[in-house]
Length: 491
Image 1 (cartoon, one colour):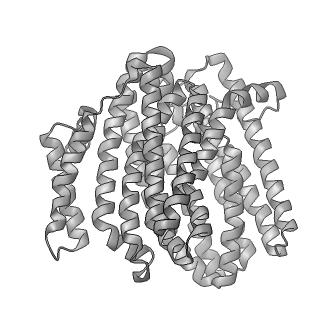
Image 2 (cartoon, rainbow, N blue to C red):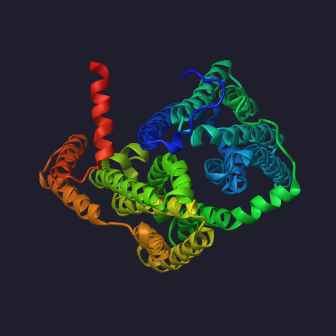
């Protein structure tokens, strides 16, 4: 993937944009899956080396820094992609430099607050120093993420995936090296610095000559950006909180065991709900450009992505329902058997999130920030009320039903807003009938006694895909890309 000097063609204005987004989305999901597998392996080695006490301190510091990351993102990554995809050429440099400056200021301030909190909370010296080091790695990483918005807009998603995997690979290699060297806690918390620095330098090399890399500290420009982003930032923050809030509320009204059963299922779902975000953000630059220039193209793209996400979400839901017992035993162990029905309920939540992700990014491309915030607030309220009611009466299963109901309400709300405010984008829901039929046919295999879970999932996948092909429910664009992949080795 050599870096071409000079100006690159505007791929968003060409007919190749859709193919690039499909391939890029597949690459990002595959890269994410590989990263999860590698991270699990390194975590096993790390925790055995650090032990229970230092392992807990390590997780505590990283959780503190991750909180800073979530709060200081402020929706700026998505807004940056949209502005670079739709803004006039003469504004691109100013906007990106302002984003770099704003991200730098927000992240540095957040890290400083985290370090002060660690000291005030009485954390021991190694944890305070570790928070500062991990925070510095976050500052560098956020600058790299902002620069990488240019790669996202150009749909150079292979590079985006490669850079993410490289950062994880460097981190994992350093963790293994530190384990061999017998290192203490602090060096492990400093690992994000070299990993983020290497990826930052490579990103600069990829985008040099086309976008600026020097931050701009312009308060009027920052205020204009923040005014535009605040409702969306609030919606993003609430969306990341409400799903986790169920655990907090459940811990207050139910037993520790019920909270643990819910938490085991939640850990599985938490990993999977990232997948629709990766798929949809691959197409988001196309949405943003089409929202500005061609509503017909936007409607076509949203509908096709909705169909693709329904098919993929349906398959993941099917696998979770059929393989819940096997998954929980691997992730948490046999003591967490009551988590199995909880995961089966939350599998449907995953499907709802696949659908809602498409509609939320379509509304973002149309600058419907306040509508997004309204629907997200309603979802949060429904979630809190139902968790308190059902969690107390039915424990983990009740909380799972509550989060499912909240996500269904949120998904329907987003669909109604999209159809009501932009009638040309009214979703066509026929694909849901096909997904239901294919899923039911595949799930019937569960009636065969004694079938091992892995064989059951594999056979159900074949039946699910076969029924969808017979019903002609798979978007033609996906089939074209599959044919291209199949012909590539031959050519």
